[in-house]
Amino acid sequence: MFTRCIFCHKPFPENGRLAHMPRGHQIAYDPERGRLWTVCEGCHRWNLCPMEDRDAALFELERLARDHGKLAAQTANISLLVAGSLTLVRVGHAALAERAWWRYGRELRRRKASYESVRSKVTAATFGAVAYVGGVLGLTDDEVSIDWQDTPVADVLRWRRFGWAAWHGRERCPYCNSTLRALRYELSWWVYPLRGPDGRIGVGVPCQRCDPWTPEKVYELHGDVAENVLRRVLAYQNIMGASERRIVEAARTIEDAGSVGAFAASVTDGRQSLWKMRGPRSVALEIALNEKVERRMLDLEARALEFLWKREEELAYIIDHELTPRRILEAHLRRLPIRLGPRPASALLEDMEIGG
Ligand SMILES: [Zn+2]
Ligand SMILES: [Zn+2]
Image (tube, rainbow, N blue to C red; front, side):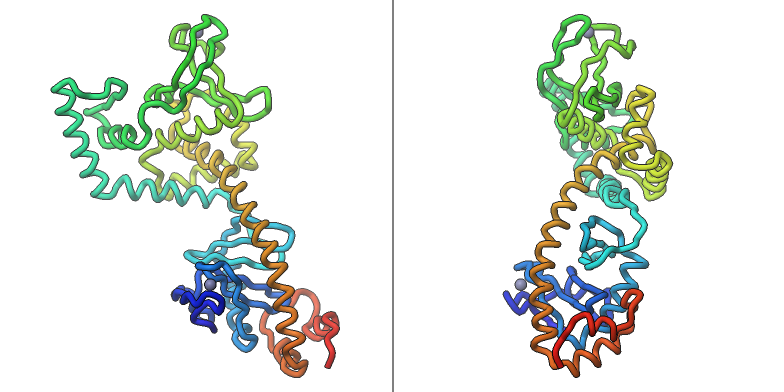
């Protein structure tokens, strides 16, 4: 097994996970054709592993992918899987349960850990003290409201991270003609998701001038703007992150709805404010909205990987077949401990039509 990239000589780090493939965090493999590559994190080139090292590693990788692999993205030919700190590019269609929600769950778990870390508490307290003194001296930002009794740490952190407004713009109230110029975070609890005329999720902001409790009298935001505002507002509201239990609960809520899209649509039915939705439904909505964005990015990555794989496979074919005597190749394929689909290894050899 290589210890460094043969192209740029950057060493492959130990992964501490695979006994037969101890180095590299990004591994590409093709269980059908018996190919194995270490992908360099520096130059992104694929290093084809020597044939004699592949069998045991492929077996180990398939088991890891099956038991711990989480599907991140997929094209017709490759699956992008994550297993702990390893990223696996598996050639062929992976029959794994799609558990899309785990990805953004990671972000919520991380947020919880950072919120609970001593450092963030101390920083918030120090910052809070300064702000408090500033308040006594008349120096505070009037736009910010901090509840010193209830959750001052969360409020201070929110203020530092998000500022005071989730949206700036101009939106006219259809009833009183007043103009909304900003959506303040602290009022964001009263906004509610609604279904826009484009079928996408929108945001209703109750008009302060009109009766704010009449659901019809709202400013409406739609399209990408609405989605971005909603994502920002939910990140603000869920600043404390979420526990594993809450993430699982949220995931169940999404699964009960059938899909991420169906869940997002169901949220708009009741015209419930985010305040009423707080808890697992709010976490689920944040996961659902971010899931769409992450999916778009990962699909791009998977398509780029598929392009790379096609090029690398052409090379691997030449190296494995034209540069390896048939005798060695045959012995190798017969030894493969993994299943090669419904057909035996000898049939595969015939398929490859390689000269003796
Ligand atoms: Zn490299
Ligand atoms: Zn109004």
